[in-house]
Image: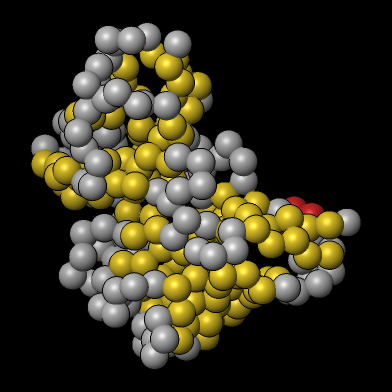
Length: 112
Length: 112
């Protein structure tokens, strides 16, 4: 997985519950990204962070939140405001601007 | 066989044949392109990349061709093997951009 670890592999959310997906990288990369993948669709950007303590909304940020307190970690919280959270979530990091992304193994989130 | 990623999302080839997977991109300012391979339930894996100052780049059993005139990218896999069965998608970026844009992908099935 190129030094990026996502956990858990599978996650279940009850209605009204917030859940947090973990993403840790040991590649010393500055930039980190969260994508959502739905069947038959391309990856859609949720949030990204170019540097510690800074992050920007992507194309589908509503119902999600992130933090970047450490360079190695970029957790994603799926809040109760996200009404259709079932999807495969992918975390990625980038070593330098305009270089390839390294992806984690993903977290499948489902609603109970 | 040949596949246009957005219009024909599946491609079946016989083991040992060559595969060609296509991707049309829309942003003429994009200058960096990547092909990823994604197996079911896993994160995308980097295959090969190319920058806009090149028309062709070769890797091990894979070749990427870039036609900037018609904004078209293709991935050629030589002597396709069962282990090549996966979804393949392209990604584009530009030097001044903050994010990658991903195609929907083409599902490649190798028939033994």
